Image (cartoon, rainbow, N blue to C red; front, side, top):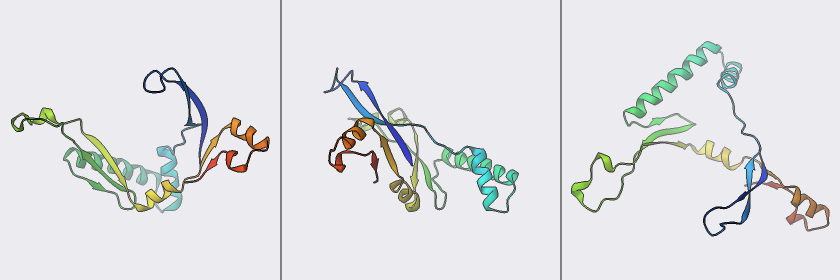
Length: 149
């Protein structure tokens, strides 16, 4: 579950300039550390922590080397990495050269299982103002804070 809280911001540009706007912001960024990943793989396989750590280090090096060569990397059920370089639009063909290329970006494209996991993550926005409306007798559609995709 990803939990959000309501934050406010005074806009300095655009159509809402000078107005205060509200948005949902993640309460805490949750992450698995490298050690947590290694420990989990050790528990679920017959590999040692050193074996898993070496495999992850090697995987990082292999992906980096492949990206340096402009090769995409398919990581089975996870997805694939590739380098994408777009170009500026130039009026004259003769002016198109390496300097007209934009900064290279690394793009990760998740496989179907990963996209499905993202679609099914539970989302919750903690909004005390909405809870007060619900308690004061507003219809249930206006209260609460949960949202499921």
